[in-house]
Image (cartoon, rainbow, N blue to C red; front, side, top):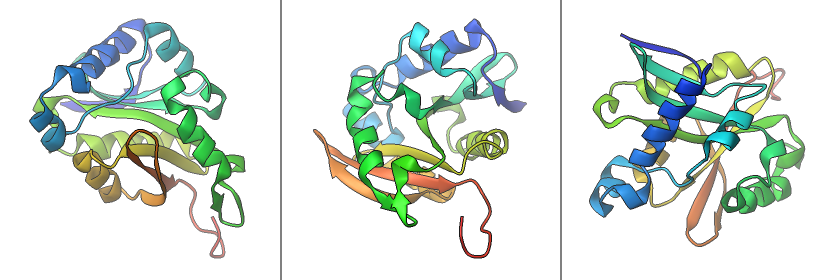
Length: 189
């Protein structure tokens, strides 16, 4: 039975890193990357552990095994991963709802991955349901970016309610996606 919760041990973090490694473009074929999706950033244990507080990463488990994850990244980690600096630069400069998106109460979903054997079974949506439940008391938005070449991930994010707020090029084409966590109040989030 699949259950959802948070990464609460070093073993959980090591299992996340193993799943991540299995889904990096260098470790899968180009065809698999196109059809199944891929992850872009390779984290190290120390950074993944720092990112896990104060809001832990979301995981799906089958028994004791982590079979999927969605990473929580606060804006304070903006400079910790060089490949993500352009994303934060974009977020900080985008106008949204009468202000700058970077000044809103948001966090970044830093990476999502579902083990191959569990794809197409609603686990992706389950991760985001759990993330919304745990993070909506603290934040207004989840922001993430997806490579335009990662069609499977773009479709999956759209299906759970993300909207495209910006597109930009930085080596490849990226779509910045946003999911509102707070209900509408008098027509305003």
